[in-house]
Length: 214
Image 1: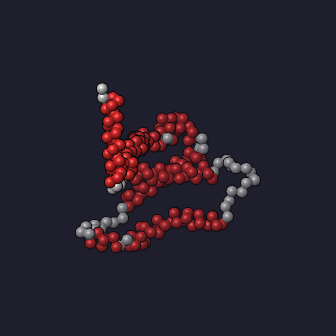
Image 2 (image 1 turned 135 degrees about the vertical axis):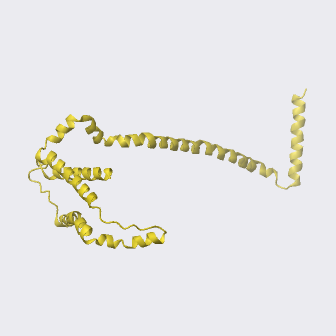
Image 3 (image 1 turned 60 degrees about the vertical axis):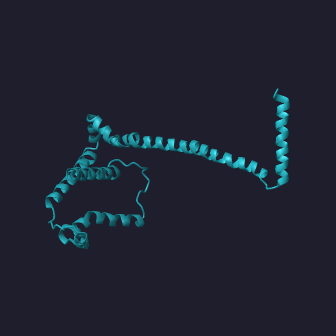
């Protein structure tokens, strides 16, 4: 519940922070520039904006058409052996989240429209929390240090093993094959070749005895 409230507050704050920094304050473009887009861009944005603001009120809690759209879900739950528990709309939750959103909106309105320089003063007064949030609490750096770099090291070792060990294994398997290719002509089935090989072997043996065996 607390996480939901904090999320609603922060979402409203940074959304309207972006709004005020974009559409309010000093002009950040040349004086003669025309920033407006054609209607093919503007019209869909208007439709999306109306839907974003009004669709929640239309769907819940007055008409319940979205809830009725999901009426098959209880039947699926019961078919799977589960139990469907009926409950009313949680008004305290809706009110609390709405208040949190309005608080975030109010903070953004005050810091970026009413007092445009107040945000910098808050950042100077709370440097450590500001820089922690500015760097996203260093979540990316910690994640990289604890997970990305070790896994990259393991992957590098795996590539080394594949390049060295696998090649050595393939080399060991290749040597007998090449030796077989060299020796295979000696086993050609010709008796004359076998006789010649035997005579040559005897000649080599006798020559060795004559020259070295003294």
